[in-house]
Image (cartoon, rainbow, N blue to C red):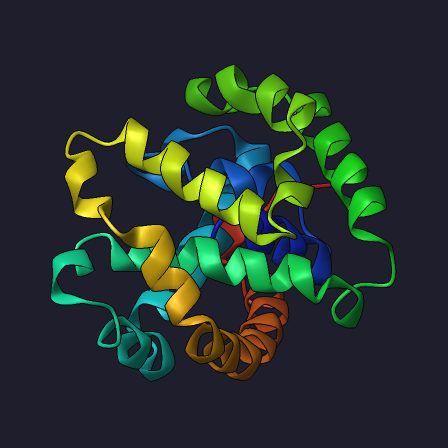
Length: 200
């Protein structure tokens, strides 16, 4: 799952949006990070672990061309965000733009975020990254942006075409898997280890 899904799942289980997103940038032991971020980081890691290990996503990986196998896990994360944005009204009561503005505000208001997230947070808002996923053009632009940031961009050669070709397979996988992930997230929020909870 990428940014939009992690933020949506955090909202879905009534936990910190900013802290869950911080999980993408928080390395090492959870206990080494600020207390108010720990539950979100822990939840983020549970979400990623299930996504990577689930039979549905593992099966989807095999449908990508061999040349894209290294990039495929990233492409699935981005394509799932696209599906969530495309069918947003089925998963949230607020419009995507209203939710996005709320998410940007939550990120901006959160203190002690990982440095890498602090650096890109203004860009996330100014370029409205979350709503950009709604359309194919926005998804393709995101894929190209990710490719430009990795050390071997050639592993993304043909990525946008492959993702579009697999559109039906991606949608079936997303629609089958994501409701399960929403349910698991709510369970995990209730079962967060005590050491990662902020004492009120």
